[in-house]
Image 1 (cartoon, rainbow, N blue to C red):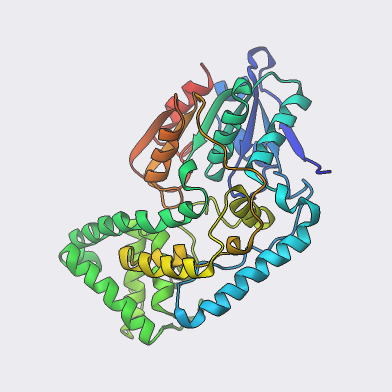
Image 2 (cartoon, rainbow, N blue to C red):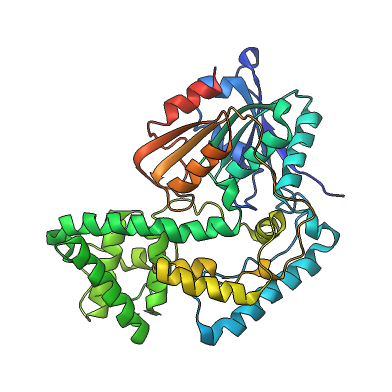
Length: 414
């Protein structure tokens, strides 16, 4: 038996109450029990009047029959000399998760979490539910809309996951879509060569970047400071760049600091070595990390929703191919993951073949669920509408003060 922990903040004006608004913050595996508290003050009054805000920890997470599965660090480049150890580490994570999860192991999936959402609806005595799902939560909401179309009311899907790409393809989309972001950055930095000195043309900026990557692979960059004594390799730079390059200003600052350190020069005045560490550690300009790193539910969902290749050699082959096509992140995205050693899913992925009058919100330059992913979600859900914030940067749109807030509010308060 699986317990579900839920929370509720009631409508601010019961006379105007429309129903309940379930909230999922992403992951997969992010706890959601406290999210009504986080969301309450960010919603406009007319939205708050309409809904009881409902939070819940998805099954396997937090207070909902938690399981222990290491997320591990699989944001690693493919190298032939380390591939055997990469395989062993991926298998270890899969085996340990299988052991720790016990009988629940094959049931920590998006389809079952959607069933849990419908159970919450029944317990609350509601005919329908409304929903705010962020990042991974967009896929959860899409699945619910297909499994329970008659119970689906107002669904806001913020920063979309493409159902066609789940889940290996959602890691690989980071590789494909970081390339146009990189091109955009080279143009931006070239226009500001007087500020950053990285090159006076996009090609020159690109050459500067790849020269530093090659140099750091041969001789790691030493950044000695009271903040961060460390060595940075070319692979470290590529991994950090994947998410950071969507933010041209902060990435230019970070890369300028790295280049100065590599040249043995003082870090430029006005920059902060602590910020450099934060960025290289993967903090995407202060934005939420979005889907990924969701603790105990992360690999069970990614590996249990759809079947992955079970041949380790396939991952090696794909990584070699994708590094050539997408040099920034291709091999990292396609390298072996614990899903290679997972049990086959008990159910197929949910077909997207029913009308869903949901609202999708998407920033043009989202690093975690890139624009192509949000467009894929829109294409998959017949009847959906999509608001794209042209030029918008960052992951998670609703409540950011962008042009998408007004149509989202109108949609929630018809």
